[in-house]
Image 1 (cartoon, rainbow, N blue to C red):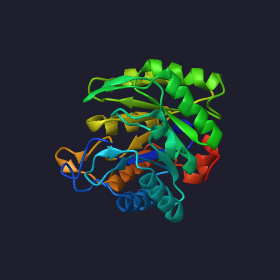
Image 2: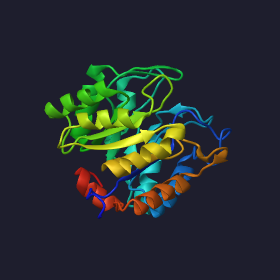
Image 3: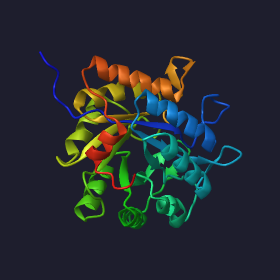
Length: 276
């Protein structure tokens, strides 16, 4: 029996987030040069999108404009990756600082549409600020990645889309298995996916040990997936991973499950990306 027909799989890699440091794993890229190097390897392995955060000289999360710019320039010079800059920042920050890099015109930026409790405290996203970020992305032709930490965030994203604050197919990313937030379970993911409008597209982020089963569900269900050291440091029990290894594994899984992997240019067309 032939496999179900789905769109090609879009693989996002998130090489560095806000929590881990090189004390946790030597494979974590915390400088622009290291993120670019990782990006090249992940692009060659099969990733279409790269999502990244900025770090300061002490490896603390920051919103350094020049850091974002240097990575964007390097990735565009050496790869065809869709570049997605994070607006996420859990310490108090003015909304203009969180969205400042929008004028670099990356392909995509994250759009956190609701507040949630995270391991180190609440992550606040005021609805007024969220609409401001969405409006800025419209202004600069940037595609939002709607991060959904629970079901209400999908509804918030749908409301923005209906208001015209999100263009093209809305792209929902289901963030699962963060401590204090929504745990990963196949039924939870299925319920969230059932809420996505027919015009929408979705991907899943499984944090920690949930990365492999969540990615597999994304492949099988016709969605997409994100892997990388932002979300999971390990390839297997006590075995540290590299970003490229995590991408390579998803590519192998997709092949075994008879799901073709999208190139960055194919993903651009699917997502209707304006900037390039």
